[in-house]
Each structure stands twice: as structure tokens, then as C-alpha cells.
Length: 156
Image 1 (cartoon, rainbow, N blue to C red):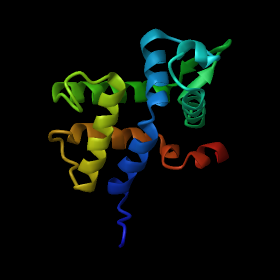
Image 2: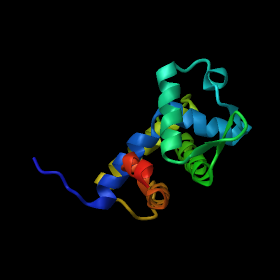
Image 3: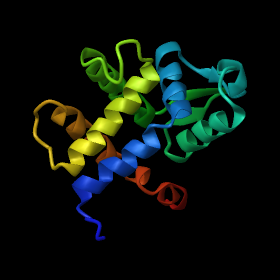
Image 4: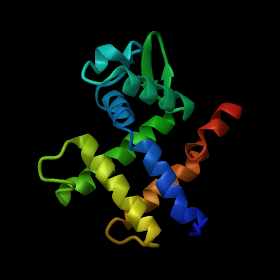
């Protein structure tokens, strides 16, 4: 079996996989919706397991989505842009009842990112149905190249 290495087809899958983590979605949208959260994230997310909180925090730091300011985490410009992408993804899913009518914000974002991955594999890059979101995902990725390889972000 051979795999294609077409950037536009592989890039959204790697990006979507990384950005689909439920803890990351919750962290970014919590800060976007309600402002800074304490650096002791267990206080802000008592329902999330510690490993999800650590993963979300570490990923957000590695990708320069958050920064620390007086014992709180705040969004960077990249984080704000990602929050906007999450909002667009959730709205798109909600209008289509994806994955179900009573889905949560997180599952809607995950479903949309999965749908965009499939659209990219199918070669859909037009401004049609999910195309505008795929374009937004590609644009966000181009502005944040470390997403596909977080080790690059640490080395830079």
C-alpha cells in the first residue's frame, strides 16, 4: 500500500488529529469564552482526568496557543484564531446535527474536523459545503506550521 504525500491531503488530517483532543478544545474555548483560567487547571476542569489536562496544557504551550500571566493562562493570537476555527466548526456541525442533534460543543468540533479530514482526502478544496472550513483549517495551519510537527516549535 502506498500513501500519498500531497500536502493538501495529509496536512488537514495531522492538524485535525492534534486539534481534536477534547482537553485542548475545552481549554482553548474556556479561555476564549470566559477569560483567563488559573494555572492549576484542575480547578477550571474538575471533570477532566489529569492526563487530559496535562496533554491539553502541554500541546497548547508547545503550539504557542496559551501563555502564562500572573498565575493564569491566556490565549495568544494563535490561540484566539484557533478558538474562532473551533466556533466555526461547531456552528457548521450544529446546522447539520453532526454528530447528533444533542451533541456537545466538543463532539461537534471533533465531528467537523473528522469531516474536513475526509473532505481533504477526497480532494474537496472548493468553497462548497465544508470547503470554506477546510480552507480555514488550511489557512490556520499555514499560519501555524508547527502543528504538523510540534518538535519544530520547540526547536525554533
